Length: 215
Image (cartoon, rainbow, N blue to C red):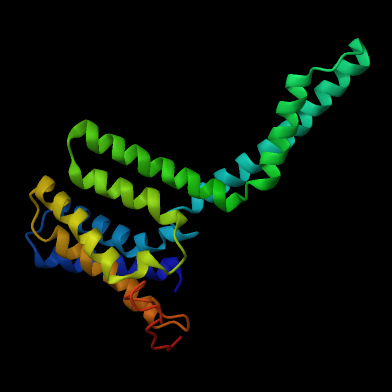
């Protein structure tokens, strides 16, 4: 299922919650934002709308590593021609940078960037004493390294997301935030269940996917 479809479903859920609960512009914005993010978060285990911009950054970092190393090697070569000496430390660093650029796939760099953002959330949670933000940060930091449509697409992840949202609801004193977050997250799983690949709702206890392919 496309990310834009998940996003649309999430926004519809948020709009419905805004109409159901006590309506104010601020409350409506909170419901729509929570539902939309919840509907997308299961796909943090791979390229998604939430990490698409980081994919471009990871490509830039990947290219900078390779070309930066090449430039460093060129500088070492120039210094050898001029001074007839080899800057061994710079040469080793140059080769290391090039190899790192060749070995580090763009996906790995993107995952590291997402995890860094999650780490920042964890730090902010400790700093401000917000347990829900610590939980969110841990989820964001761990998800990119998991198998796609694995643990993040399960009832266990949904429960964890609900616990994070419950903390946010207590923080905002806004009724229904946890319910909206859980429904948004479940909408993603239900939508993916309708695709040929299906969803392993009970992974790793039951590893076969549930699917009702209509797309």
